[in-house]
Length: 302
Image 1 (cartoon, rainbow, N blue to C red):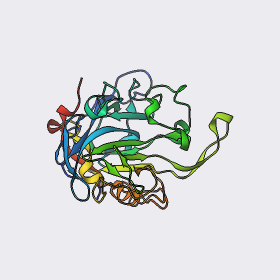
Image 2 (cartoon, rainbow, N blue to C red):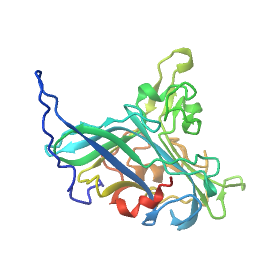
Image 3 (cartoon, rainbow, N blue to C red):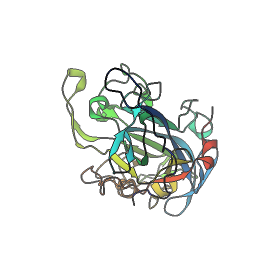
Image 4 (cartoon, rainbow, N blue to C red):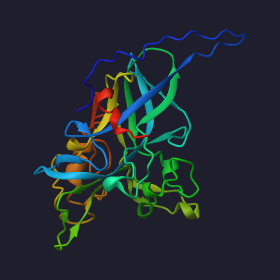
């Protein structure tokens, strides 16, 4: 279902146009969109139990959680999407931002100490009612070398060399007891790696890249107050229907393979068609929800 759980109350500042001899440019106002990672109604953190997840309620701990967003926009009273002009820093370029909830501690050892749970930018001053964004990396930036890219596209852990692109979303959990594989072996981690698949063309040779499954996920929040609310990726919803203690074939968990049996429930909860790589209902994703910002602030560590 499209996320729409609270009436928009903030972001109603009307700016005064600056006086000049030319046509005045509209005033802009800064905007910070907070994101969060939750499980079982609580902040999801490295080194702390997430509680029961998935089919059968398997206890698990966090291993990694990061995702890129593009096309971030506020929705005005007329329903028009007004792009957020992103501030450029180590977490975001002019067109894409990285949300990072792992801090390299506990089960997340191997990650980064720094975290980021917000997207910052500006819009023309006015009244806005909602928010939209897409989980993904724009095609022109996706198929580039991490070694030569500017932050935050330079993170090797988000690279996806075998798909000649990047992981749009990387969520990994360690189920208690591990993951039983079809051959009887055990894996430590259950993976969700979302990215474009069926890609052809070698960008290293100057070739353009095309992918049969774009797997970019648009999300629309019909009513959103950036002052008091955050957009949460809810692990309880994401793993609903997934048996985290076992894997029936292919990559462990779901790495966006169209024939991977574990990808069916994951893609359903994301709101994507596993067969086509397109959204089932554009803007709708069961895995995302609006939550009170005050309840998620402890997720982010300095």
